[in-house]
Length: 177
Image (tube, rainbow, N blue to C red; front, side):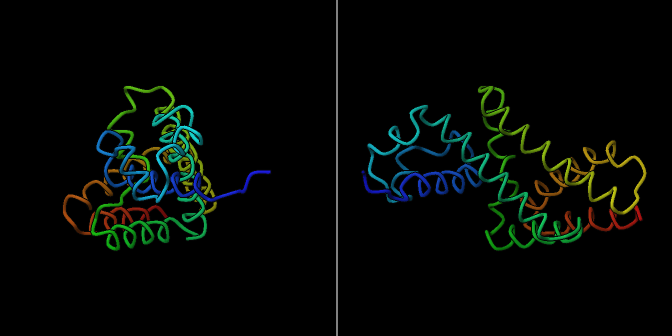
């Protein structure tokens, strides 16, 4: 039986980090392999669909881990704090784990677009559940609006190099009850 290695996971996690910060087109496969410490032949062995498969799986991994992080935060306020802390810790490079790739390539690849949409739908459900738990009326209708507000705040925070936009969204959310 062949020896099991962590090469696939390393490549996947490295790609997720790079796609999040740089986008799809700015992230080269040689960069992923070099930073992941993986031999060249391993990419197509583990990801026969190439860069597109790697991106889809990296988005799925990032979305699930990010969703778990937000669940652990326990509230929308806590989630906004997590987002702000992550942004600051990365020097305002690491915003949403999906947005950079979505803006970069979702119109070019149905598989990547579907992975992005799946992530957003999961987070929307989480927001709706959080609003429902707070007895906010029309939680399901409001959730996509709040997700859009958070995504916009992340973008503004990156460009301003400040978590103030996230804090503004947080203040608005508190006013909902």
